Image (tube, rainbow, N blue to C red; front, side, top):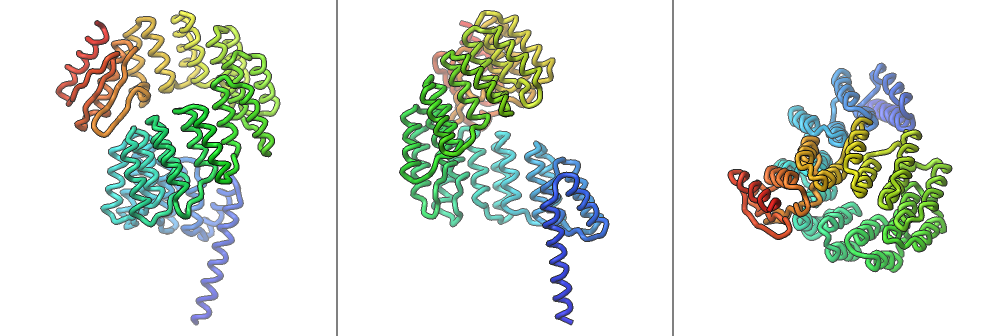
Length: 501
């Protein structure tokens, strides 16, 4: 009898595995058609359902899959719910993800580190640090041990709000007080946190620690993050130092490395060097992609070599590569050189091509700024209206440009309205002007219109400061206040007074 039961179990396992492999192999509608067939035969189990949960592309589809599992009496497990939560988070539905976590508790399924990592990552990407920390605390209370990716998610959340010190504390805790193995993403997240703070020395330290960590071998992706940091917050000698370290360690540059070098030299007007690194990319056996070509177009544009930029753009089109970034870089270059007719013409071409080559918000931002530089603020406003009419949503960078133009046109009411609209849409047009430290928040409103500056102060007081931090406001000279909600009126009045003297 035992032998018969064992043979039957083995046969069930073999059939289940064959179904699983078939589901993995199939794509799109064929995958779902086959899944429907095995469900109708009552052959689907939790492993098959989990695979389909991962393949589902819509929230409604995932909810229906959970309902179907209940109907078939297939018990969901931690993988089912964790995958559902991860997909909900990536789709921007944090409330749905939290509801799924509550449902897990209701049916007696213990979340794991992956479950909590997905939630922490979602809150972190939305700069909701309190919620990210709260999720970490819930995980600890349940006795769930964090994994390396859990540490990485919370470090990323801290880095995104400017708390590199907090991220570094977690960084060293994992390395020195746990047996967890660090990953490349773990190190690059720490690099990114220090890059946001402009701390190249700290970036170098992270790279050195990675190189010295036993059992960890840095790869090109880690050095690429360090190279990118050096490009953003240091200068070319620092960039080339990273390339030298890669060579010393025997790490071969990949396409991202070569593209970063094209971009780093091109943006500094060193076109010959940028062309040379594009050739290095090819010599290494890589085929330039749209990003590499766009960096070269930008390099030509920076020095006004528009004919070569246009020829490169044409070459990209001939290869069937997406050209929206390259075309946008060329529009920006035309605008900076006062060639607004050429910029308008290229924008029209992008509209005609449509699809992946259709203009995005960055193209309109460049054109709007171009008209502003020519003193044509009314035309800039027309560009703004044209973009809104086309259904293209402004981003934080666009609003920053729009506010600058309104300030220079002394249209303070429009500046304040623009800022408020950005906030209402969940954007942070002044995020680049805010630095969050352990004991203070620094807000630079120098050069803003009074209306926009006051709105910025109100937003920072509401979103960032109500935790006892000091607020340093830079208006051209530094003024330091310690605020609570009761001082809001005093704060905004002081700033408005300072800016209108």
